[in-house]
Amino acid sequence: MANRVEWVVAELAVAMLGAVLVAVNTRLQAPEVSAQLRHARVRALLMAPRFAHHSFLTALLEILPELDALEHVVCVGEARPPRIRSWASVLEAGTQVLPARLAAACAAVGPEDALVVLYTTGTTAAPKGVLLSHGSALPHCFHTGEALALTPADRLCFAIPLFGTWGCLNTLLSALSHGTTVVLLETFEPRAVLATVARERCTVLHGVDAMFRALLAQPDLDQFDRRALRTGIVAMMAGANPAFVRQIVERLGLPQLIQAFGMTEAHAGVLTGRVTDPLERRLDSVGRPAPGVEVRLVDPDVEREVGAGEVGELRVRGPNVMQGYLDDPAGTAAAFDADGWFRTGDLFERNVEGFYHFRGRLKELLKPGGFSVAPREIEETLLQHPRVREAYVVGVPDSRLGEVPMAFVIPAEGASPGAEELLAFCRARLANFKVPRYVRLVTDVPRARGPHGDKVQKPQLRELALRELGLSQGVPGLGGSGAWLR
Image 1 (spheres, rainbow, N blue to C red):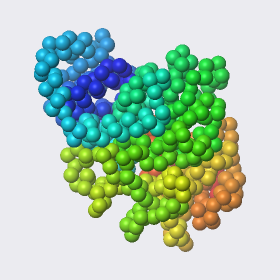
Image 2 (image 1 turned 120 degrees about the vertical axis):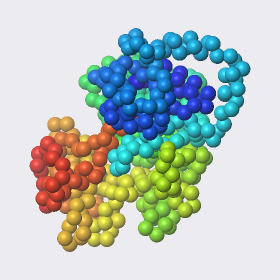
Image 3 (image 1 turned 60 degrees about the vertical axis):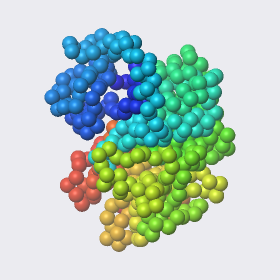
Image 4 (image 1 turned 180 degrees about the vertical axis):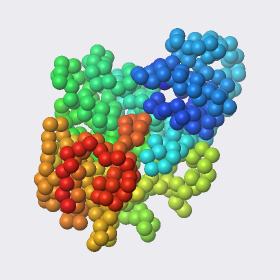
């Protein structure tokens, strides 16, 4: 189901009663939905008959025989088959519940009780069901509102999906806990967002970088009144790009925009900027740890904590961290180190002021000639080139150095940078062992569906690189210009 008021009502009702909400990505195909509903043993399903080009009813009828635990199906709207309950009938049934029974159910809910099961995207492994508790959600989400300085005078244009942790927890609960008005859109559509911001005088707007890029690309952007906009969060899925964040601040008009970093297992906003931070830090970093969240950066090869200016794996500890993966004790145990810190698998660098900069994924770390190189550092360098829109780096075998970087570049609209031009740009800014050995201009890269936009699949991208170099029989090639430098 897309973003609807029934979604919000159901989430809050489920929380009050101590039941567990299982949020399902609306972009999943029927077999994926079936796997998650069966794994979570879902007993009641709230759905809409269709959304965009997806017929959810058709998908449900296809997988219904597989859902042994399912007892109730509730469908919003009028188009529903017989035997599927309407939303109105559920509301009517609720009026028959005795107040004492409702009060007893609410009183029995404690901070350690599970609140939601949210499934990871599964770009490097099968999706896992993450259990988050009441006690992990409420304080952490309140602090998100504090970072944004939300008040009852604010109006949030809510266009990110409710089915992700950023939507159903951090965004929704940070607004409600601060009395902020929520203006809910079913889905993100650039012109609808701009029209809503203008009509409702919205002051807060969140989104991933691709969403903001789409807003800025609207030819009649200046026809929409955006003077009320004040703050919001941008998640830079394609890599840090201070110049682009500055465009959002200045062209769209979000003077107090911040960045943040999080994950399903520990909530959105593990690291977060504050509206009171200096502008340059809000442009080039994801901020500092949220209140109540402990973090440290560790060299995973020797389990040594690293200092400012060094790159290490982010480890997280605190009430915001998950209870575990549903029915996966081995996976849960492997996710934590010996001291109880959650292993994020993400590489960060902390500056002397305490602000954090994302440097890539631990599994993607390259070792050319024995040197540790974070692909994100190379990607961020390429993103500084005015004719580059997106850049992704993987490691490929090399007979002399063992491994060297290979860059896949999506040019800016209408641009066609040469490979030598990009390599020269990198040589002027990076140590020689960090400069890509190969550059490939492409129109797109492999991606996986995520709650907040598509995530690049580095394993498939590396397989493509190996195939292009004649080292693998991997996946089919991508459309592109074929620009290379060896």
